[in-house]
Length: 205
Image (cartoon, rainbow, N blue to C red; front, side, top):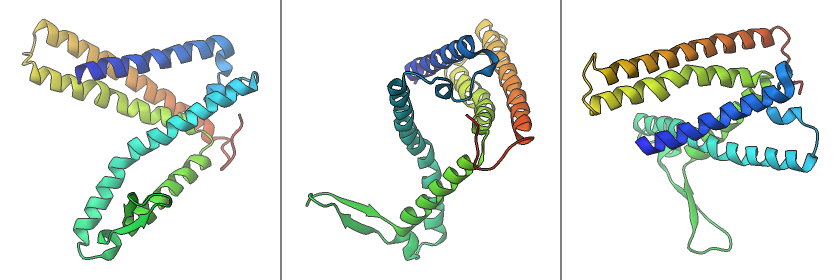
């Protein structure tokens, strides 16, 4: 877990800081939320980058949506244990393959599809989607990336209060908390500014 956190968070931080610095160096205050929309040429390279983003989002959506699916499907199955909508499993044989098949319930087929449709429509309605993502990221950064992992580490390592390591970890936590608060304020200000001239299903690139 320690190595995964170091490599995962370290590489992600390096990537985003580099992207932010290079974007600001190139476009200044006019840096777009989606950095790819700021470039016009070469078209083929931009298309490849957009395709890579699309592939990334397919996987990321599945990763973040699965806990939500699992939560409401388990809750529904316990709430209505005899309902065929939640319990009955259907099997669909795949063409050109006798040994493989897809198993699903009507709950998974219908509710998951509706969830994807609703979230897609909501994302399309918000022309300031980047500001919303920034706010969600700022809200989740300190508790999920700093506070909880740090608390678990101090408990596991049996670091006592007022030790040098404990003090340094608390200072780091406070600095990250301050950064999160500043990011939240900036995101709220950005959303408020966008709401003044927002139009549904319309975005100016």
